[in-house]
Image (tube, rainbow over the protein chains, first blue to last red):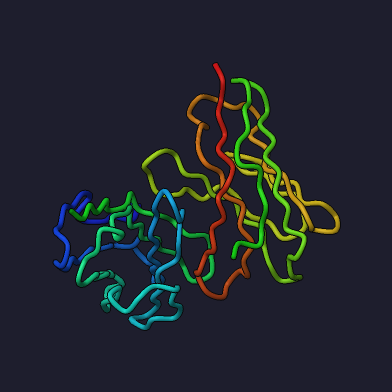
Length: 111
Length: 111
């Protein structure tokens, strides 16, 4: 069974731009969660989607948004990028409430 | 905030058992103890979880104290590939997928 895939793996953007990251969950998993990891703040929960509905949201500004499609694939979007948004963005999928399986992450650099 | 406390770092000799402690004194009756690890620049990897009984799988053993206020993850024969940050998490199973990560324990395996 294929694991969680994230695209792109690396991305460089300029301040003020916007970015969209993609996550394909493990087949059969309907829950997708997103996390941001930085050296200073560690792993922080962004949001969780299940059956195309956002179930949980972390403490991030409205510039961070996401969505989930009917095939459970998910995207997250960050608008008006700031230097502090440079981070590793991780996606995880699960059969709801069970252990989560993480993808390799997208490393975003904002210059 | 994370509901667990872990030592920031530990060393273990290769081939020996690595015992990683975790305190979760405010754990609720329906919360499970989960362990994940993150090898440098990769997504976190699920290791094991348990409620109150000791658990073992092909990767590790989980020992939970009778009062459930602490637990120990045991890697029976540590190898250099076990060098990683280990996260202990408490969460309610079969509810939502929001994980609050703490800072974890950085385990160094010494050759």
